Length: 213
Image 1 (cartoon, helix red, strand yellow):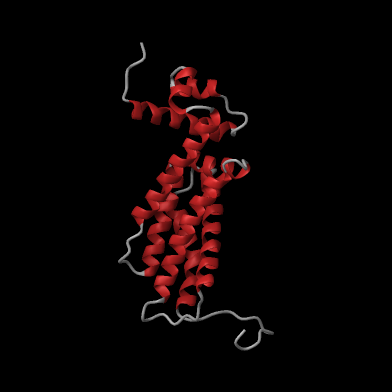
Image 2 (tube, helix red, strand yellow):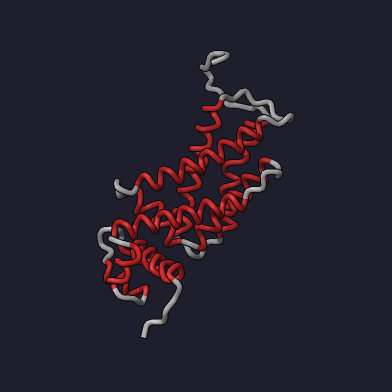
């Protein structure tokens, strides 16, 4: 006999199973039968709790996106130095990916390839970009910074940093032997050397760039 569990616990079991199957099979190839089998419950119960396959996939996206955002937010300490804030955020981000590789694959790969769900991923990315842009702008507003930057500059840099972090996270998801801490260190070394120079007012200009351009 199936053990009676609280609804919230049963739903999390179903979502765990669905994330695993969607990660392995992709949205179209995944079946509700397999999800029910992995969860150890009947298919009618999956429908009763979480609805259609589309609704189940959306629930998976929302849960994984929320978990990721919460992990990053918890890692960033607003009172820390700019480099420490970025480091803490990166470490929390890659720790999440390392611990939830299936969830990352569903978020980053499956959602991007499905137009109906791409909006969820876009919303998550926008929130992360805003956080990173805010960190950069806050760092530049401090007394020691002398950076002639506009708000759009911070946003553009944030998109570049987030895009690079996503690509490296996607690599981490496929290399289980890799340590998330080392991956975060690689990313920090890649982005902070340039960011630190910018925060000190050092910028690169093309040889043919006009003064003041």
